[in-house]
Amino acid sequence: MVGMKVIHIGNPILRNVSESVEVFDDDLRAFVKELSKTMYVEDGVGLAAPQVAVSRRIFVYDPGDGLRVVINPEILSKSDEIVKMEEGCLSIPGIYADIDRPSAVRIHYQDEYGQHHEEDLTEYPARIVQHESDHLEGVLFVDYLSASKRAMLKPKLNQIIKESTR
Image 1 (cartoon, rainbow, N blue to C red):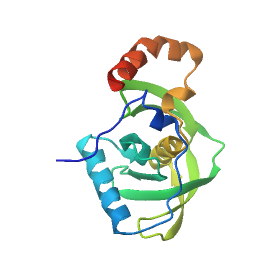
Image 2 (cartoon, rainbow, N blue to C red; image 1 turned 180 degrees about the vertical axis):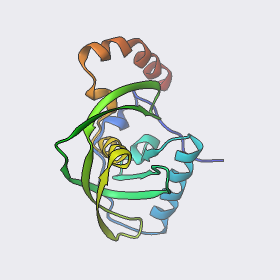
Image 3 (cartoon, rainbow, N blue to C red; image 1 turned 90 degrees about the horizontal axis):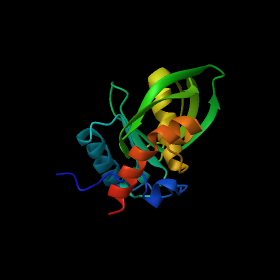
């Protein structure tokens, strides 16, 4: 049984800018392990700490070839090429929409041991990292939608918000 619960849109924690991680200890690694388990149990490809009500700069993701741990990420550059792709979010269940994002990013981050890494990501991994990095800034994928598309989704979004604030 996983002890973490994914929170939904409407919870104010999802709109906070997350705090940097300063201490890389066993408690952090235990948190990362639980976050990873929760992501797999919920059938997600990524999960950020704010989505389990922890306002820290941590996310995990698995683009299909294994788990990655990203702590204190900083996107150093983004490609000029923009790609449209459908996105969803564990914190906004049942809502999917096409979102434009750069096709490639260069990212600097730390792992769960505090080691620094720099990586160039393209396509699906780049998209996941941008989506999860947004969570650390209090941004949700629906924020990128046009006003008309948001208006169409408003009843569904309001229903999720109502259920999450009960």
